[in-house]
Image (tube, rainbow, N blue to C red; front, side):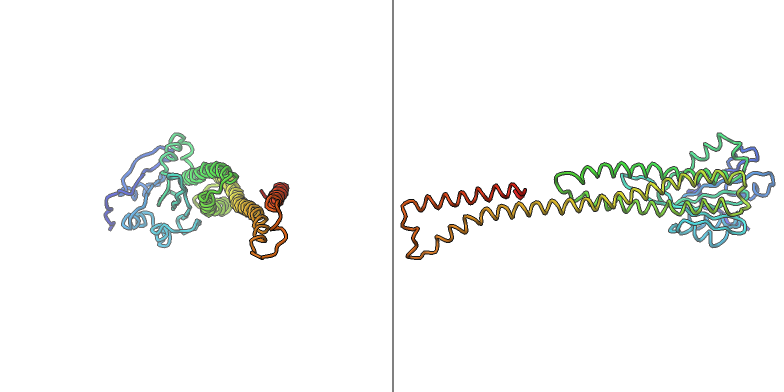
Length: 331
């Protein structure tokens, strides 16, 4: 006895593709009938943040493993590839630029000999464009769900590339602030946020390479040898993005160090200037304080021009000290 399905608010796509690659929309309750027909077709289902009842129904329809369903139920999974008796389970992290910041989500994929199920959580673009592109090339769909899996993973990796390019532009703009004349507190904060997002991006991209490598190396009932070379191209894209992110992380770390060094140098220059002006004030203070000691017998006090001579001595001392400090760049 099958469990009735609740309102399919989380079902984004539910279709079958014939042996010739032609699409036919089906209801979720019709999946069993489609799979019962040994006609070479396969089912492609797209879900977004499904509830427990929908996941239980999906497990019932496709005989999915309890552990895989449990992982799909809770979105906080590390990127991984696991093989079960009748299906592969893949968990990958997705990234999306939202209001100037990178938001991360997850996509969980179940693939069997005659089905592909994508479960999206959080920030993740839909796969409608992927389906539309494949449907315009039905010859590709004749190779089964492994072609759809390649297209989905390729789409996810391709979405990493513009984000990495935005990081590069953001870093270039921050470099102008780093070398500006005035210290800006928000610059170091922005650099820290950028490095944090790059680290999160690396945690999403680096495991993707392991997943793609396993898909190419591991014998699988669901992935044909004709399709495996396509995953190599996706792996190359992921490796390039990973290299870009590593380079940007190093550049951001260097920029943070340079920014802090420039701040330290600027503070040192300010201290030097303050010390120089303090030295200029110290010279007349020392001389005039000598003659403010109220002794009764000081030979210079009785001189007719002593006051003018003292002014001249103070002036010469200040001028000489000023020129010296200018020469050594303390003023």
